[in-house]
Length: 631
Image 1 (cartoon, rainbow, N blue to C red):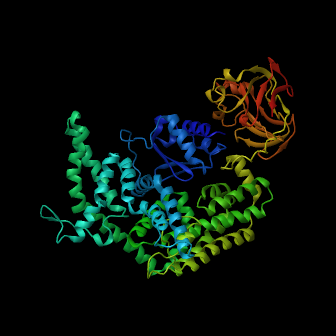
Image 2: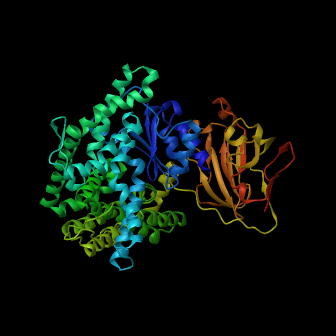
Image 3: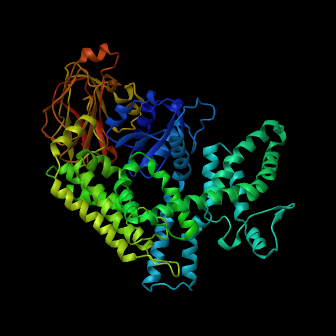
């Protein structure tokens, strides 16, 4: 299914644009803030073949898509006419509680740039590895350029935070960025380092040039932008519209600049210092217990979005200390999911599960665990428990040896980041590798020992489509030839462009034809495999032996019938022959529900072929030639 169609389906099922307060995305999921979550059709979203899972937590409505979420996000915002973040300023506010509000704010601020932070972190780690192996010298121009690219984002992090925080607090993004730039301005550092005293018209300013001022800090700018949003709104309330283009910025900065340097910034540093001290105190009290808890429960925190309470602390530690001890513990939990999924791939008998578990093991290694968790370990239960135990073991080892990460990473790329870049600070690099290997091996072995029930997972997937991706199609043959597609229905022919659904009539789903059925039976149009079948039975997708992907959608909006009047006779993964009965359906029940019975039959991978020829007939019976695929 195309990203545009996925986006259109998701947009419709969350209640449309009018039900969206805001939407952002992270590595695998769309994160909605909905006006009314009850208006979203959650079960239908879960049943969607291209939706891995739906998670409601922390005031967010999260639709897990997978690694191509960025493309779906772009299509969704384009279809709905949304910007990078939509406004909920005028929408009714729902009381979420302190914890949920905190999660919502933090995730909204950090999610947009987390990929960049991770990417630059990996770059910094690889550069450290190159220095460690003697491949590059720190005195070379090449090193200085690459290090600047790797380290600059974290150094100037307050600017990125200013922009995302302004979006969250409904303030002017560029005005917030200007405030952050003032906090990082080189002239301020020079003055603070050389002047006898630092004050603002006699009011003392607390500013430490020795630690780089506000470079790499987190809390000061977030607090400042929050206050800025209030000041800015107040200023706009009385400034004449014809002066607002410069007056709002002028007056807001006149208030916010001194207020930030005198009060907000120092307060933010104190709060950060206290939080860091608490975390350090807990960690020093029992690094092993801390490692066990974070390693074991990290993935559970991710599922519920609670990991956003830890991520900012890790970033803050990197900015303040130059290293962090929380990330190695979390990565142990991530790698353990890969180990469990790999064991499933080796032990599973079902080819579909093997393929899903194999891809899940790879994506988890690189820090993307949602497909692994929702599609493999969590539905099977025991592998998830095994991964939690593996994460606990790896976390305990990392905690005991005080393993550190010197750049941000939440994947296997943390390994080069565990090489110390600070003189006199021991990283325990070898212990870090042992911890990750232990997490993987323990989860792998336990999964093999505990086993899992494939039958139960298959039933769960059939009932809920719990995020499995359609089986990869057979490679298309490119030699000259044609493949005839038989009619899966008996009835009257309807041109695809006449179907009252723009998704089909526009050809967005592919070329094909439609049938107004007179017999309530849907049969196989060719030899192949069932790649998709909705739990409601209203839509079936097959891939023929020659790689033609065919979608048959019985009626319009029949998904809303929740399977009433439909009986499935096959399941996903079944091998089929032309004429095999796939679904029986009650035509009268569909009409009684106010739905159209016209059934599109489209070749969804039309682009892979030279032409899709439509038979020039008015009526067809089961097995009659309906489409010809020219290869």
